[in-house]
Image 1 (cartoon, rainbow, N blue to C red):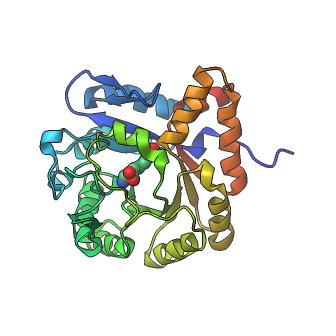
Image 2 (tube, rainbow, N blue to C red; image 1 turned 60 degrees about the horizontal axis):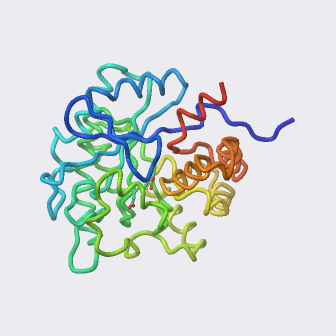
Length: 306
Ligand code: PBG
């Protein structure tokens, strides 16, 4: 008679990648989360498959020497994400899905998700690059493209170019509702954009005082061809998850972001709350209407559930 339940197939595990060999680097602000070099990544992917997770999400820590103002490393077929896609797909075929961010922030010297002119990120000029980044990642074997850049109109353009090039089976999970949030701080340490950002992302990410705008963002992305939508961050935006699910009835994902992970992890470490809090919080996502959750706890939770 429980109305909601968690299963391991509800969770997507983010993976941070780093260049080099035999590396497992800890991330100071995210206890228990690591960056892995490609030769070490199989260990984590094995675990994810055994846990029954349906998908991992790849995020690169790009060597600062490879970053530039235009983020051109995003289009290099030998960048970290492309190499990881090829090697994971070769080894695991379709045993596990792979999702990739579409955005320029891991590659730009200013840490913004798109091309910067003065204080602003240029919407239409950025989309032209995102189309090519999407196509490249699809060619390398990405199953689910996840534009997290928050430019307007990119879903339609990406869908069109995927279909034209024979990638009609590649899915698009649009980060349709991504708030300009302070909860992304630890992630920015993980991917190495923290010191680079001189301004916030309020010019393209959403204002946390708004909820009607979330409905407009989702409506546009569905019309343009999104298969699923992401709400992000998670716990401070459960009302938005509920709103979107009730209004649109399409698969809704939520991202329990790095700041949420760190708060919970540090509180557990300090014994302020216990481990069951993780399960309690993740159930709140399900109650609100999320069909799946991207969470750094994915492997851990799968183990608890077993
Ligand atoms: C960037 C991106 C961000 C996250 C995922 N993709 C951060 C940002 O917009 O600055 C955040 C994830 C997290 O905090 O866990 N495109």
